[in-house]
Length: 181
Image 1 (spheres, rainbow, N blue to C red):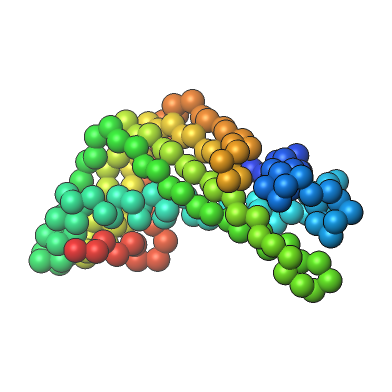
Image 2: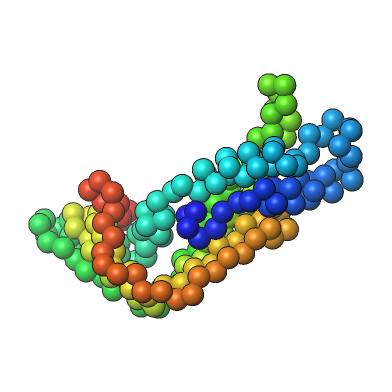
């Protein structure tokens, strides 16, 4: 997901300012650690590590909930060795993640910063291959995406992509993603 959005030192510093505002304008000398400079950079680094997720698998989990995908999975179980291909027309998927950063000072957890990362992907069309009740691969075609990073109600960052054609087929890890029936 880092290809779409990433955290910067400035994003973390803005979140820290917002957090202080929630506490009634707390100042740095009141025991509140605050985040600036090097510390904010390290926090951003850790949050970026949280973005290392398999985007295809995240999207596949959403597709697995679609009725026609579940029906195709059921048919593929009844006919072992067959592959069902489902085409989904224009649609979008929204995936929301909440990375939490726990602030620790002198080995004591002080508080948590809870971010909201929202990813909206719009597809013109997608072909899904399903076999044995599992989503095996995806041919995504044309897509665009918007990623938003928020702290509470404050939007820290929004990044969007132009429409692009995704070539080829993306195979899901292992033996595919189980589609709940």
